[in-house]
Amino acid sequence: MKTSRAPILILAGIVFGLSFPLRAAPILAAASTPVVAPLPPVASLAELQSRLEAHVSDPRFAAAAWGVKIVSLDSGRTLYAQAADRHLSPASNAKLYVSALALDTLGGDYRVRTPVFASAPVDAAGAIQGNLIVSGRGDPSCDPRRLQQDFLTAFDPYVALLKNAGVRRIAGDVIADATYFRATPFGASWTVDDINDYYGAEISAVSVNDNYVDVRVTPGAMVGAPCSLEWLQPLAGLTFDNRTTTTAAGGVRSISVLRVPGETTVQIFGELPLGDRPELTEATVPRPAAWFAAGLKAALARAGISVGGAARGVRWPEVSASAALDVRLGEVVSPPLREYLAVMMKQSQNLQADLIFAHLGELRRTATTPATMRAEDLALAGLREFLTRHALPVNDVIFDEGSGLSRNNLTTATATLALLEFMAKHGEAKAFAESLPIAGVDGSLRRRMKGTPAEGKVLAKTGTLRWTTALSGYVTSLAGERLAFSLMLNRFPAAPGRSASRELDEIAELLARYAGPRD
Image 1 (cartoon, one colour):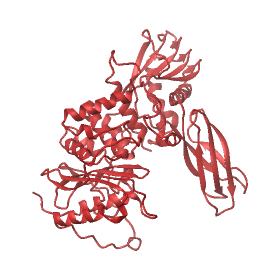
Image 2 (spheres, helix red, strand yellow):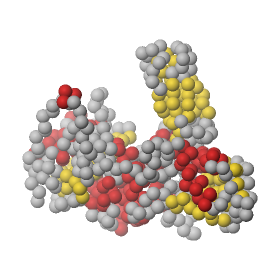
Image 3 (tube, rainbow, N blue to C red):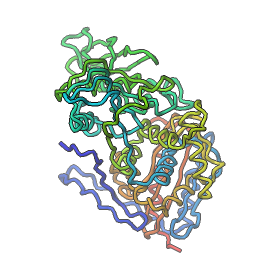
Image 4 (cartoon, rainbow, N blue to C red):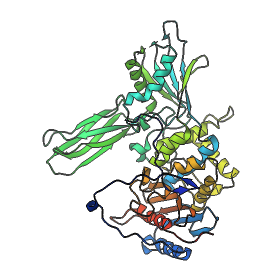
């Protein structure tokens, strides 16, 4: 089992003159692989423009709103544009802006440093006659689920730090202090529906396991019996209200989860057929700093370090647990920004984007910053400064938050394309490009454009909300021309059997087949 904290990235295609190794094709029996005639190249710019225009102007989009822009990175010419200055919802294309801001402000080598304090010095017997305080800074990398590790191994760096400091016993409490983020637990203008699901997990300067717990639902032993429920990670402080039923074999599978905001009871509704496979689902964890503290206390006990007090978490606007006289025992250091940025972008992980954005905001806080100014607001001000400083279309980027979950976020294809062009020339261009999902290979594009000319060639950030889909990134044409594109489609209910994302994928596939001559 891989236990390295660095993500495994397998990249393909050619972008910015950087060559990425192709993933080896699986070996399949000839009879299992259908023979598909290769699609012909798009031979000229005129043909490309004609086919793009026919696609976006199809009558099925009459009530929808497109924003499209495609530019050659080599020549700077615009190959095609359609309503490129229209304000539209970018959904998770907003993460492109967070990624660019982070790389430009901090650099790819930047690491989040989480200090660990004691309210009393370590005495000669190895005891802390007081509390242990982990003062979170928004490290998004404490993610045992992604690393397929046992939950308590997430706390190994903290256990090692305390052992190195000679700690054998903590008389007081284990406290996870999340007050560094002066922010509410949820992003601006999220909907109430969002916060029930894993992608709307609470934002906390001390986070673990992306702040949600996995639940396994297994059919009962007989028809009519409740299903059995199991937490796959411990100590979240949640309880079940089991509303499930086992039905006759061959029946419908239907499981849903509800946790009312602010409560710790998780209702599990639905049914599973007798003898059927288990269902995996999730529940968000309220006050995740308290979950972190409980996990750390258990990990310390497992390592032979006793804790006499409780495990607890604090968050803003509660008073910080840290004090000026605290003893600094050390710090836990995250992987480099470029590594966890790639995880955030490829998985389109909202919490991790929010943590990076809030961290950027708090780095801007000064002694004169109003105490009520949220980390998110400071980050948004930083984003505006970044766009202004680099002569990017600042007035066309109207965001409430950074993950893209807000329905109030607006931008244009022109603005996103300008950002892509800027980052293609940036000193962190490689890290930015390598963070993007690859068509048919990984991340949120792993199942899209497989078996097409775009597979392994399109590197792009996805974005999805109800009635909104977006795709923006890079592709190299058949003639070797490096292209950047931004595609947004809003207010479009897809026809049954065809996803809205397919409408964008067809454009990306056309670009991958484009064989027109380079300027």
